[in-house]
Length: 395
Image (cartoon, rainbow, N blue to C red; front, side, top):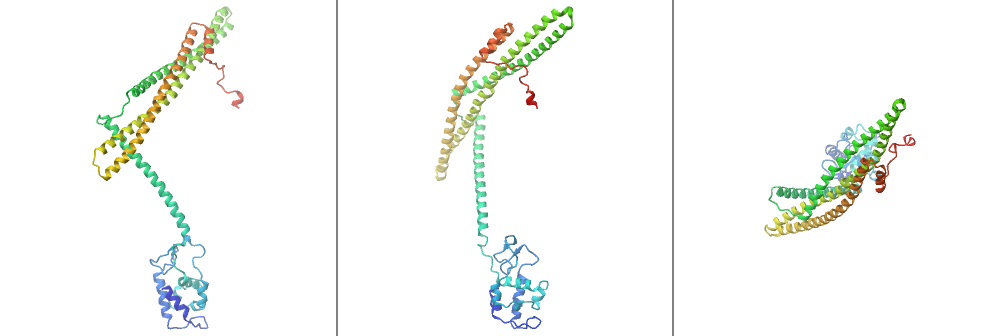
């Protein structure tokens, strides 16, 4: 349609009257009919959301106005060289009624645009489309990867849950290392008993600390009364010295007990806990290994068509992966249990000897032996007020 109008406009001569109106031509009705079809089938000028390269309707090449740079109406000077500008300006009839609200330059620009604007080609936004497609491909790749991860996790969880339920109800078989299982159970029982020792040692520390504080306050009271009671000065003085000596020995014993508590806490809540974490990973690997082993056994008992053989091969690969993981963690647990036992014996031998010597020396009233015990185990007592920040640190 646009080519027909362009051919007509390029070959006809339009006489102009003195007032600028066009004369009556035989082809004027045809031009107005073409323009009428443009207005009927073209876009509504009041809607600025799209600009069509053709005559409107469902024509291809519709470009969003957000992607158009510059004015919405394009001026084509080459086409105006072939069509006199005055030939289309300010016509009468249907054209004039349609363009009544526009000035002549705007009318000319609009008509020129309708007659000469080519349909938008597919390559006009090639760079934007390419970047958009690349972003979509990247997003799709990430989504597919996450979907595969969730799929594998769900399948693995299903298999492990099925295996666990089967073992609970006695229908499924499980891999058991009797020697290793016995060592693991012994470790858990030992940890529970050591936690009880740690709890009682902390309670003893708290009670003994309160007793030492009471002795310290009682010694200060006796000393004050010794100064204010001349008739009982000696008696109050003896008791004050005794309480101060007991308080000093008590602080020394507290240092030994605190060292004992700290060492037991490290052994129980760090060394043993680290080994138990490895044991937990080993038990999870054992469950996964048995789940994939059971799955492989079920597939092996089924039919042997092409699809079944492919599933068996995939299950065999997964089984081998889980088997390697299980054997590696079992070896790690065996090694850690061995080193833990050696470390436990060494630590407890030292700490139990310290606890015994310190308690015996304190209640025997042997201050020298108590101090020697602390030196033997390289325990340094903090001076009074060492835990408090200095006045410079408080500033």
